[in-house]
Image (cartoon, rainbow, N blue to C red; front, side, top):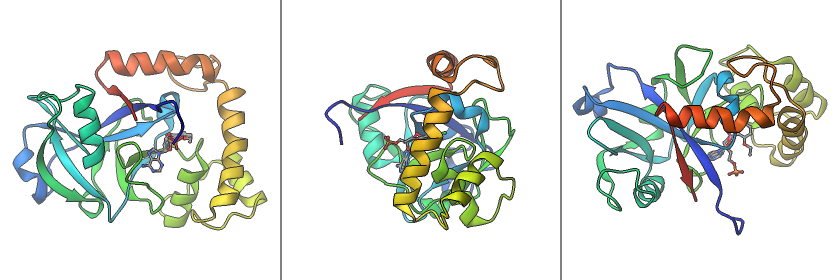
Length: 227
Ligand code: A2H
């Protein structure tokens, strides 16, 4: 969109075996759903992952051990950014849709929940990031409302429940109201926030962000991605 490329952190969420039939051939490989985020410091609060049910994804080989599930477009970008073994030519091992991914159990870096699950989100854009989003309802009104719509997780965080109730947001499709709720919550969380959990508890969120990103990169739990 903008003139500057957007720099995302891609979070590698490991798919826990046994793999579903479409991915059965990949047993023995490390398989990940890869989510693009601008807020790696919020990863402690991941409750689930989001996929677009009708979205087209692929399982792409990036090296001898790792296979990443992303959109075809993101796979190409990743290859050009030299994350794949064969530069500029990602190998697709399996064609998938979001439906194939819903319900997959995942182990995601820093999450306080040992296992999180892939769930459907209808507002995902397939031409942004990887087409997979990690869900932090405490800090992202889109995530909060999508969960609310699903009615699958009643554990609502009081703060943003208030914002969404105050603004009378009824569903994830109320784009204008959600845009305003997001402005307010990001300002509070990112600009004024303090980390509550993890290694950097007590630090300002703005200071913790680069530290947490570096840590995820150093430990191989994340990779950088631009578009
Ligand atoms: B963020 P920008 Cl806690 N479709 O991650 C829809 N949304 C997508 C997407 C796609 N294909 N790919 C990424 N995103 C989301 C965390 C987060 C995010 C928090 C707070 C704010 C926030 C947890 N979800 O984003 O259009 C991802 O959600 C603030 C905008 O490139 C990603 O970061 O500016 C963000 O949108 C990228 O949005």
